[in-house]
Amino acid sequence: SSNNNNNNDNNNQVQFLSSSGGNAGLALTTVCRSLRPPLPVSVIVPETTKPMVVRNLETLGADVTVFGKNWNEADALARTMVEDAKTDGSGNTVYYVSPYDNPLLWTGHSTAVDEIIDQLSCNGGDDDVRIGAILASVGGGGLLSGILEGLERNYYRGGGGGGGRRSEIIRGTKVMACETEGAASFAASLVANSLDSENNSNDDDDGDGNGNGNANEERSLTMKRLDGITSVATSLGALEVTPAVIHRAHRHQRRGRCDDTSAGGGEDVLSYTCTDAEAVDACVKFALDHRMLVEPACGAALAPIYSERLRGRLLEELSGMRQSSSGDGDRGSSAIVVEVCGGGGVRAGVLVE
Image 1 (cartoon, rainbow, N blue to C red):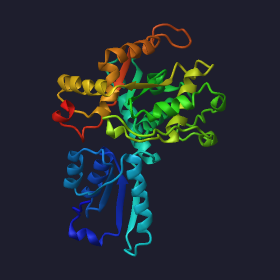
Image 2 (cartoon, one colour):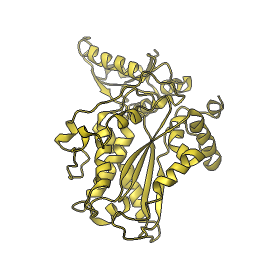
Image 3 (cartoon, one colour):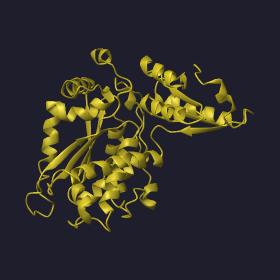
Image 4 (cartoon, helix red, strand yellow):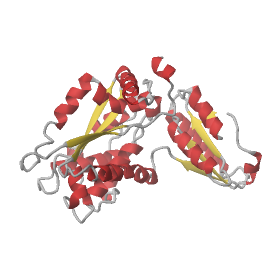
């Protein structure tokens, strides 16, 4: 543990504490230390966290503690520290900030979908363009929950499913949830809670477009927890995803299966799992194409583009996008969008290793 807080921070009565594999901690620290006066922030990271990430956190001003074999163990310590602070007599208020399991975070992530739609709406007059697929890496499920919330909100914007240009752009969008082998907690829970299973067949969409669902959001799920993380993509190292992301995935899938073709057009959530080698290779090829370094956790989302094995599956999944569910012919162009994120824990040498 190391403490980089300035002495004048000792008078602050509000502190923030989080657990992180790296990037969420960097974001929280950046915000807390940018405020005036700066707020104290502590970040608990697992032993798998790269030393360069720990140094970056400390340089930004975080009090960093390295603890646990994986993020879940680090998070358990973080929560314990927050509870202990309530009775330590310091008078400080310590707030726990989850790296992924909070509706505010999901709503923040959801605005990426708004931006994508805005860009496609200003693409020079091609009124037939659609979002064919959105590819995103999954750790604990925060980013994916936000993407699904953004799709749902825009789907119902304008008064009911299928109404307005914004909902037309996202009609039929498939969401590819990308993970590496050894960190595929979303894939495990999605399979365990298949939409085709008897227990989940009646879970429906509330249709209000706010991304929160209804009472069915509380439906019991069989969440799967990994025994451990064995992937180099340590930023994806949550042993279990938030149940909210499974509920939201189900709602998106149901819109695609709706018998009323005016209210659905093939929407789906599909799990893509790549090897560590495919994720790293995707990072290298992306760097050559775009002169930008991203870490293997992001490489999982790039792998379906750069891996010949996964690209074939992706194109096959999207082959029916040009035909609407009502059979009304060519649907025009379909854009493939990759959410490129996660560069706080990478250098060229890391990819070589």
